[in-house]
Image 1 (cartoon, rainbow, N blue to C red):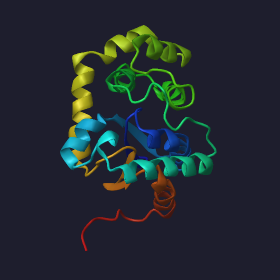
Image 2 (cartoon, one colour; image 1 turned 90 degrees about the horizontal axis):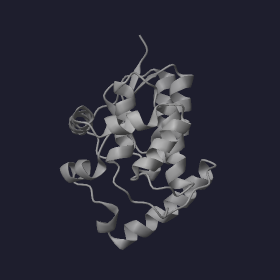
Image 3 (cartoon, rainbow, N blue to C red; image 1 turned 30 degrees about the vertical axis):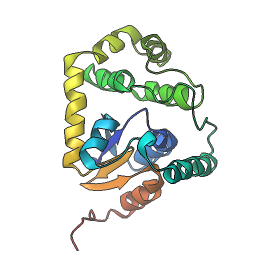
Length: 207
């Protein structure tokens, strides 16, 4: 049975976008199963002590821009630091991922397009027509998944992901949980790859 990584993220997160391609490559190269767990970040922050961007100290906001530039270069990406349609409410775009999973479909082609749509093309993923178009372009049923994304079962799964994140000591996006060990942030991907390569036991917070 393959090892498994619980992947907590939101399409609203630039760091999830920056790390997504490398993470999927790492998981594939090690034969690891990935459980996609979109999560509402503002609700997760409220529970775990994080602050939304607008409420962070200006020094932290400035440093964030510098880090985005660094990692844009490091990962070989080309994206806008402040896309014109960001921030947006992620309930719909994240919900489509859950809807696809509940329908037995692979949301990965949609995820690749959705991340690029936000950060590279500056599209509005709070708009149902935009999201449906991205889903269609991914070869999935756009209108059906957008409608399902707004359903109560998807909403319940979205909330359960938040509860699962809190239980797993996850407090931001992206977070990769391997054998109970949390790797927070795409800048920990190399450490995740090392853990998979070595096969070591999970580190814990115990001294």
